[in-house]
Length: 89
Image (cartoon, rainbow, N blue to C red; front, side):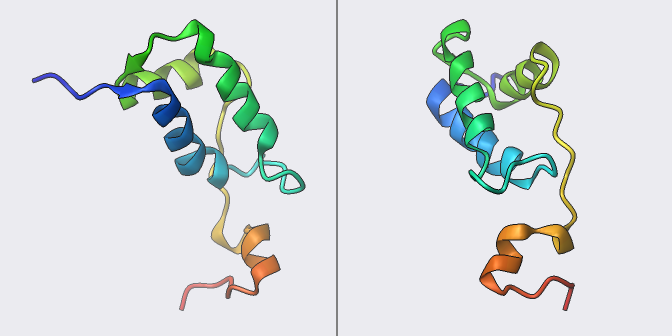
């Protein structure tokens, strides 16, 4: 069974929203614009379409800038700024 392939623009936005935004290394001052720009710079070296799994593998193993470490929920700076409770309820 073949997995559906997605366009690279979709994969970049999907990866950023699901991995970069939750990463402990993200710069909260510019909301991770550096990471987003680096992902877009990869566009020229990738085919037009890939599966999600292929894209994750490429970004994590084929690049040196992306090694995401999940952020603890109580460390979320955006949540603190918006006044969202930081613990589990």
